[in-house]
Image (cartoon, rainbow, N blue to C red; front, side, top):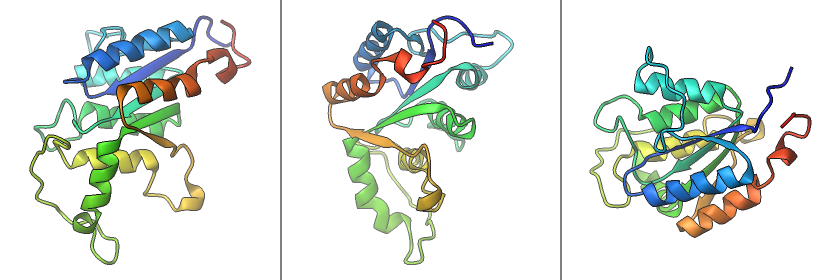
Length: 193
């Protein structure tokens, strides 16, 4: 039996320096009729028996759809060798084959193109790159996250769910969300609201 109520959409993004845009994304998606789970806005259900990372990954499992925003900031976990929570949320959404929309900042797209020659050898094997943080890209793993979203690990013919839309400004990002997500009923036609 389908769950009643508005579809739950989880928004995943690094936060610092992006707070105003996240507030706008939250408001826009709520106005479209979604129930929005976003840790930044404290709307993600929390289980006190789980860690912060555990709660975020549990949110990905329980949501109906996933929105990922890839920026030049890698997010929580940047100082460790492990993946950031934003990256782990994206990978979990892919693993679970969630309906997802991923948006990537133009600067990340350019950085990937510029750094490609240093990240891969002539046979396409990934090299270790000694990367220092810049104002445009604070961690090389941002590019890994972008490539994971594009599913570059799969042959082109087998890639599905690999749509990643480049945006140049917060207004551009919100315009794309309007085009893709404005009608939750159109995305889930058999669902009771």
